[in-house]
Image (cartoon, rainbow, N blue to C red; front, side, top):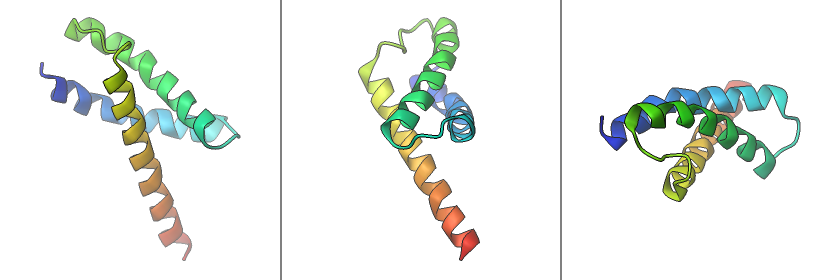
Length: 85
């Protein structure tokens, strides 16, 4: 399985992690993102066993995960604004 395919399979888990953090974490900003990254890394532990790759300790994987989190949250915020307008 290619690296891109693994990343695409992780997308739903990233979205789920964001939703759980939104429900459970009351602080904002970096702390929330760190919590979401922690949840995603938990899932990565399972994925890396199947892919036989070290994804957990890869700085590029973490940076990309943070960018996806930022993009999903930005999209959620835009949708929420449009719904409330």
